[in-house]
Image: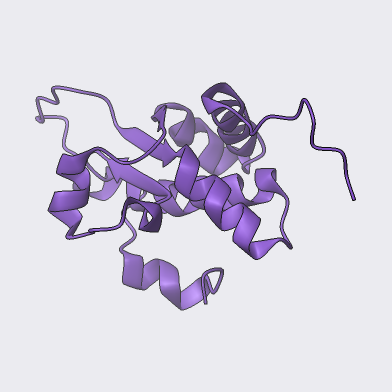
Length: 135
């Protein structure tokens, strides 16, 4: 049995570092626009986001894109805040532990790519057609 004494779960900064590494590894055509998106890492999704999505269990949401998809933007838009991807540490760590078969960096990269797909204008249905990660 492994000795867990002195070990701690990855903190918010580690989650953000892994997310930034995922963006840095994207193909150039996606990496440039993706770098304009800011990250915010929190323990759980704020209540207003959960309420807007109709989610009662905060462990069900690992990430969330907040912004205007590129396909809907106009030069005439007056945006009041930058596009943002939220990552939720506790649900990510919970899923990672439950799966037991994926590296944490790979799981975070997958969440980041999923949320970036929303930034690029894809719907959840569009993403589901090619991404079977959560099945």
